[in-house]
Structure formats: structure tokens, C-alpha cells
Image (cartoon, rainbow, N blue to C red; front, side, top):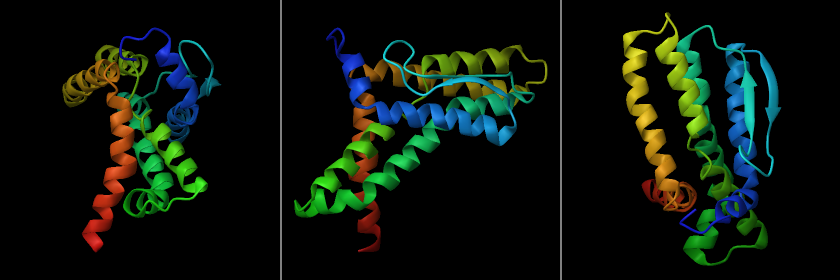
Amino acid sequence: MFFIPGLGLVISVLTFPGVIVHEFAHQLFCRLYGIAIFEVKYFQVGNPLGYVIHEIPRNPAQQLMISIGPFFVNTLLGLIIAFPAAIPVLQFNAGTPFDYILLYLGISIAMHAFPSLGDAQSMWYTLWHDENSTWWLKALSVPVAGLIMLGTIGSIFWLDLGYGILICTILPKYIISLFA
């Protein structure tokens, strides 16, 4: 991350729960679509941090969802985990150690919501090389792949951490304000 060699690996090790949930989300979407899974590595120190090797989906739309599934799963799970801790810690400065653990878990999970470059490449290849891929899926894949690229570039400038903090601290305060 941000021009310090090796820091990205340290951050990834510190936020390993997010990597595990990211790979679980890929696996979950494979299971939902009945896609055979050949190998799963939830976390390893190295590149890649984790992966799911699966068969090529029969339907190109399934590949799109498998690729972007972690965005939905990690975002939602990060929010759900951090929500009960965000208000006491941020609003009242009265958090317990358990609240801080929940915030750490929520932020680390949410900050790994962005699909990786490998996810984008897999999605792109399937959608653009499968004869069953429709024009609208191909059209949808262009901005999705672009957003994934921007997210990857943005992670150099801590965009992923900012996203995790936004989802786990600012969003809970906003949701509470809607009902207050």
C-alpha cells in the first residue's frame, strides 16, 4: 500500500478475516449456481492471498456474479458485524473491548469487498469469449471491470480501508439518524 514495500502484505495479514470472507463469497456464489469447485485457499501469506478454482460457469451471468459476489457479501457482513459496536464507540465513547473487536472485524471484512484483478480478468475472459454471452452482459462488464481497476489503483491510496471505515462507522450512524 501507499509506496511502502511490504506494507500491503502486513495489512493483508492483519485484515485476514476480510480475505477469508472474500474467498468464502466466491465459493458461496459457486455453490448457489451449482458450479463445481476444485480448490479453495481461504488465506495464505503470499500472492494471491486466497483463491477459489472452479469450473467455467455454463451461464456467463453466473461468472459475473461469482466475480462480484464478494462486494455484496463482504459489505453486508462487515456492516452487520460492526453495526452494534459503532454507536457506543463513535457516539458515546463508551465502547467495551468487545466493541472494538467487532469494529476491527467489520472494517477488515468490508475493506476486502472489492473484487481483485484476478476476479476482473476471469469475468472479462468468460463474458467476452463465451458464445452464449449476450451483448448486455458484455456492455455491463466494461464499467464493472473499470470500477474494479479503479478500486485496485485506489487501494494504493487506502481506498479499501476508507471503504471499510465508511461502511462500518459512517453508514451505521446514518442508518440510526434515519430512525431517530
